[in-house]
Length: 220
Ligand code: 5RP
Image 1: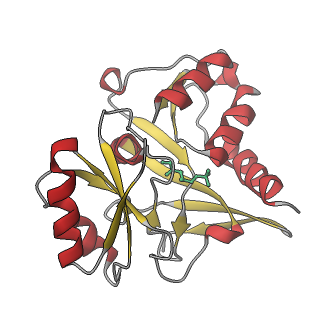
Image 2: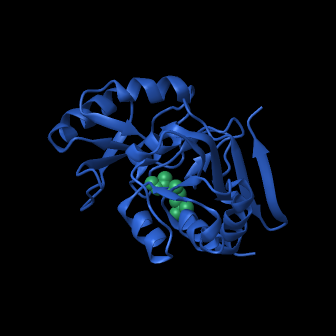
């Protein structure tokens, strides 16, 4: 099975977690895009969606799915999104598509985070994928120096501006031994909006597309 088919199988399996009549949070990226296509098939059975990026908003609307502003919502049962890496403890690196801040906000509101990936994203330890850090533009150089002090090698994502008008530093070389602690520490650097570690709020369920079908991994 090719990687896209495994992603689609995971995206389709996520429909079982969507609560009928309610609003669903929708992530960003190639797997989330496939989820939107699958969600379109049940669009009359959901109240609408909250989008984690302008791209996702456009895609949802193009399928006739109503998009709500998060400020209009007090609770949301489920958020569905991909990941760049996920561990058996359900900690993730996200932000390869640059939507990490909105993704983190929506997942904080959601009752359940359903992560959809193909099997290549499952890792024992986070950190092979460079960690995205969203920074306020005037702080980019300062934050980069602070990341170097933590043994990281930050590289500015060329020509990329987030939906929030900020920049992304992609950081290699960090030793991510304690993802919860590192997530907190990185967010303390002045000028960091957020970083792509999703460990304080891990996924609750991960649907992994494999050549043998979709495997479900849950938080203990
Ligand atoms: C976007 C994300 C994506 O979920 C992550 O990059 C995975 O993307 P894809 O489904 O294309 O592999 O965090 O900011």
